[in-house]
Each structure stands twice: as structure tokens, then as C-alpha cells.
Length: 297
Ligand SMILES: Cc1ncc(C[n+]2csc(CCOP(=O)(O)OP(=O)(O)O)c2C)c(N)n1
Ligand SMILES: [Mg+2]
Image 1 (tube, helix red, strand yellow):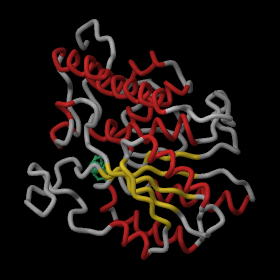
Image 2 (cartoon, protein in one colour; image 1 turned 60 degrees about the horizontal axis):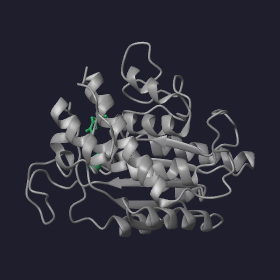
Image 3 (tube, protein in one colour; image 1 turned 90 degrees about the horizontal axis):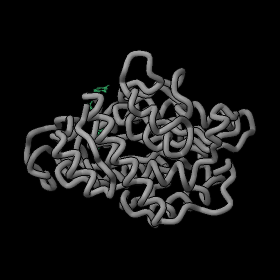
């Protein structure tokens, strides 16, 4: 697939890619005995849609100055990004087997100096939107038209630095900046209290808060979608492009399910990270339509 995409990837192909991506996440983490599951799986449909339907990038020329930028601000979900980068052709899928090993290009958190396709290092939550705002500002000053995308977690959204960037982005009219919030309703542990929309294991980080209203008041363009609906994601991306020139940054509030796609990981903070047993891998493979022939190493 070239940098300029004449046709968009259809929904059936996106579903196939997302299933493969989810499988690479759970299998790679089991083999490495390290890494995260719930966040990469909730974000997978959005990541696949970005890399196969939206971002103007060339895996053969990852440093192209004209490329769109993508920052995974919730850097603990690195294995989700690596899986999609591999599927998109930035490096061989087989290289995922080196995940989190010393000397690997695929560290436990994204490292822009090591991994082709990684535009900003991340892992300390809260910083990616500021980096993205800087890139968007630079694009304006240079007169180039690349778009900058930043994905954040809903737990991450509690970090104060995020809100400094939210304020600044509007002030500098960064309509070439889009934040995608993975609203999976769970973080690592969260607060063990019961609130209105508590999922009965841990409290939703933004329970009772009108995030749409909050971003609107900050002067952002807000799009709320189901983050697992490929058609809704495609429409949201179209709307992002339409609002360029408005002077407003856009936030996509994407409602998702943590651990989406594998029944035993869905909707529980307990699979924020975790190592699947061979039996669990076999079950995940069956659900995702993948072949699992051996035990986790
Ligand atoms: C500044 C900082 N504090 C704490 C952590 C540890 N940490 C890693 S993941 C996580 C929870 C993140 O939750 P969320 O943003 O909702 O991510 P997701 O649900 O998508 O996994 C925390 C607290 C961190 N990486 N950085
Ligand atoms: Mg979350």
C-alpha cells in the first residue's frame, strides 16, 4: 500500500487485520511473559483504521518529512502499535517475537530512536498530546500539511499535563491535531468504589463527567463514536479532514471495551496486563480465527 491511498480498506479486511492484530498482542505478551493486553485490545480497531484507512505514511520511508504523525501517548499499549506497524509493513511480523528483549527494536514502551514508524517515545502517561501539539505547531510554521494524531487512554486523561495541551492547542488554532481517546472505562487499578456507571470491579475514570461538554468548552471540535464500529470510525476520520481550516483541534471520544475481542479479557481491569496460559491462548485463537499450534514458550 503506497503513501497516497486511492481506495480505502473495506470493513471485512479491517476486521481481518484487527483479529490478526489482537492475536499478535496476546500471543506475543504470553511468549515474552511481559506486556499489556486490555489497552492494546480496546484500541485495536482504531489503530487498524488509522494505519490502513487514514494515515498518509510510507512504511518504506518512515522518516518522510511529509508523513502524517501518530503518537501512542498511552505507551504501555506498545505491543498493539507494534502489531499494527508489522501488519502495515514497517518490519516483519516475525520480529514481534523479540518484544521486550534486550537489544530488540521493540521495547516494552515505544522508543522513537529504535522502532521504524514510532514518531514519539512514550510510556510516562500524560505527555503525548503536548508532543503532538508541538508537531502540529511546527507543521503550521513550516507551511506543511501533514496531520498529527495522538491516542490517549481515559485513565491517562486524568494527568494534568494533558489539559495544558488541550488549552494550548485551541489557543494556537491547531486544526491539524486530533486526539483519539480510548474510553474503555478502566485503567490499571482505578478506584474501588461504586458510582453511577461503575462496572462493579473498578470505577470508570470519568464516571459522571460530560467529557463532550468539557472539550467543547475548551473550544475543541468533538466527535463521539463507538470505537469498535469501523463505519463510525471511517466517518469520524472524514469529519476530521472536513474541519481542517476551522481553527479547532478535534477530539474523537471513542467508547470501547477494555480487552475487546477475547471473551475472558473483556471488561475487566484484571487483564490490564497478564500472561495467557496455553489453554487461554488456544481459546483466544479460536475466537479470533487464528491458528495456535504450540505452547507459549
Ligand atoms: C505518569 C505515569 N503514571 C503511572 C503509570 C503507570 N500506568 C501504566 S498504565 C496505567 C493505567 C492507564 O490507564 P488508561 O490510560 O485508561 O489506559 P488503558 O485502559 O487504555 O490501558 C498506569 C497508571 C505510567 N505509565 N505513567
Ligand atoms: Mg482505560
